[in-house]
Image (tube, rainbow over all chains, first blue to last red; front, side, top):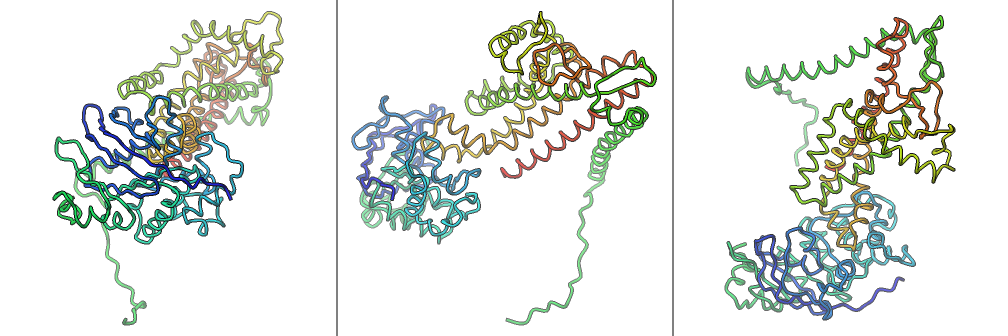
Length: 262
Length: 326
């Protein structure tokens, strides 16, 4: 079997502030993501949690008017250091998006190894890589007999797990997930949550979710983001998931997790 | 659960899809007439051409398409279009070959790279190019462009002359009046069409795919070549075919920059020696006898049918591509 490194990395964001043009959307966010932990980012729409997620693997800078202050440390190294290559960063810190986005012109197999082609990396045994990655995303049994079918022939939930497999094929140390289940049915959602649990044994996971139950089911720690009119988003409360949901310190957290707003 | 009664046919009600008011009725009628008018016009042109061309087609037989001679002095006149038909295809193909990379690059820059204001300016300028009358482009080609392109032709001949494509048989080559130069002129004329279609297709690319590819470590070029281009390919092919339709029908501009000769030039594109059906019609039209007129009508019919087929193909491909993206 293809050797995957079984070591996760720790990630920490220090004093992150974000602008789009002149508009500031995040103010001074500092969060630590210890190795092998699952962290949930929750908060109402527009509070900046997805934007924050995109700063963690340098996807943020692809938006033309984007601005940033602060630093993101991957095992102590600043990913925004001029000496760091953005491609290396994005390979080490994988990302799964809200809407499943398999490449429509590629087969299932080609999708899994598309990261190799896109980043110009080589793998000695792509067939093994395909199988291992699909197994880790727990979709191997469903697709092993149809690897050459178009990726769009899969159901939405399968497509999303294919996208997870595609990220895993690059052997990331950290996996960022931006509401990965919001477009999926409950059955598919449950399977992806199980996959998250399994993956956390070998990597660090940060997941943005609107679903309170999901945050409680999958995460070890939770950060609650909040923004107001004319006030950029920030973290109101950050702690163990158990504590954030059951004994929140801030009254706004209490209101949000109990469904009083948002 | 009670048994479903399937043997009783419910009575169907009449559902109205007609116009909702008098104004609506007139709108409906006007658009119907207008759309049918275009259809009828095309059919009438086809019938007209066919009627005028029939005597010549009958007299010349299939050699009209592949023969090598145009001699209207003899009796009966010999009118064979082979070199012009081959020349049209040759020039159009060269034009496509030159225009496609330019158009794709321009469309990529406009959609994915330029700031919005610059993109708008570039789009307007390229569209303006399409609005230039072809006689203007022809004159520009003759007076300004051909002397410059002659240097490129010379360079090609001197460095790559061992390839048959770039060979020249004559002793004192001028490097002008060649299919090569005509190809460039046609390229200038079809770049706007291909750019405009490609721009539209590129701008419909799902940004989720692009983000996904970038997050996997893609570079600008790998995302373009492995994700954007493959998903856009059918639409771009449609745009190229639309360009091809115009290239085949191009007349005046080519007449200025290409030596029309009734001796087929299969591949030596730097020779002052080529053909183009539409340009041939134009160059002969003024002094044509009645017999030759019929032959020229038959030539027109050939172009008309080829263009119709290409445009039809383009429409099918473009609409399929649009359907798939949705």
